[in-house]
Image 1 (cartoon, rainbow, N blue to C red):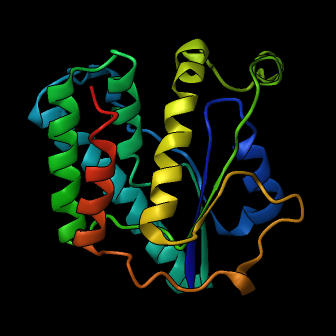
Image 2 (image 1 turned 120 degrees about the vertical axis):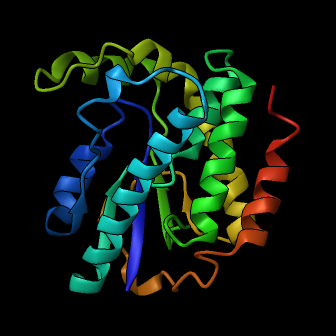
Length: 206
């Protein structure tokens, strides 16, 4: 029984990897249909995205119960996105704080949680740009913005690695999943771990 998260910026190749190594266990990256109608800031916006993330976490739990394994294309927690945007000045600090509060409450209520393992793809600009241009199936009009987020995304998961104690791999394994060597995460809903992790981010938060 486990949940694995696959992360990386747009055009990093995470969706391709997920489909190649875990199609039958995949929780795809999805977005609410009315997302563009939502305001960019405010407590209701923070709750809106937390609710959507909780839905994806619920889908992962259902997959885990049914098949023993769920592979999430992008982290259902996804708090990193607001934090990374804040680091480059693309989101007000207050909105990051609202998103943090909503996410913390969801974790306390076990509507969101930590995965058992995280595979994070780090990619160079030219390779990512080429993959972006070659992918005609998806609109990637925010590629440049997302590439600017990569250093902060990587730092987020480096700190999460320390908080969770060895559950983050900064690559996508070429041979696929090694579930036999990934122990169950007993810290899945540990609010103290969450708080310590967030505290470790504070030196970086603008």
